[in-house]
Image (cartoon, rainbow, N blue to C red):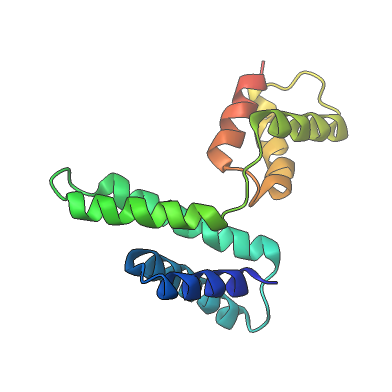
Length: 148
């Protein structure tokens, strides 16, 4: 079952429960998924669906962070929407899992002692492997911690 079907089913449940805030959040997520599918002109892959959910989470988090302190209504709405979106987001890789992937990449590239000069080459191979599974910022910080 695609994520569109899962979100649609959750939205129907929210409508039956008369939970307007949850229904509105699910409606926005569903429209983002459907629009991406329409743009692609074929069903989305699981990785593409997960990327869209993560994008919506990121945008909502920015809305929350950039809202003025006196606008509690915006912050509350964004926080509620984030809670709903996170239910449908894939689990991110842990730092240990990221380190394992980095170790594999270092082995493939033949770099036993990575330095700052090697970072670009490592990231070029590493990022496609963790795309949609880990936050790029966390990957970058983890790799930076491993550099000599």
